[in-house]
Length: 261
Image (cartoon, rainbow, N blue to C red; front, side, top):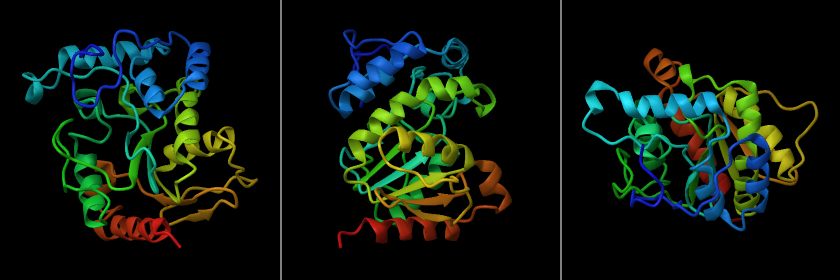
């Protein structure tokens, strides 16, 4: 595991950053964070969920054979990108050998290969790939975020873990929503995590809550427009359930919505 303050690219935490050890402390530290950088820093040292802490650190110690020479991040992963985005991209959780290895969401895994290529084609990323933190990648008026900050076993966080982690997302949304015109939501789990977080951040959500689907578009009266998109998982991209053309269509629409009137 890479300790906070040791110089890893993009690491905003240091040894003085307060650490949440349970769900109550997550809520307190997220609500008290004075700015977006503080939300990001505090979330990356969180230890509130014992199962997730044990799993992410075990993965960082054992490693995948192809990455055995690398030092794994092994900590929670924060949102990343523009501090005042026009487009927000919502995922569920970091990959065990992707974000949990590199320290940056969607960086260094097959899902990220698809996502960053699409963002680049849409003019929302400087480079078509992102392989490690500090690789020169830059998002353009765009930010990536996630509902659960730790890599979960089998990519399935438990309901209680999603609830415990949600204050980090709510605090992040409060900081970035004033400029956000479109939120691209990758997958049904991300959609389920986002809607209550939006409500907690002060954005009214229709009742009954809109259902997820690829290409679904929901314009929130007092907030951004939500765009549903199948997740860029290998299960979807390898089978053709999600194609480059389908992904490009969603991000082209996000770009349209993000352009100033």
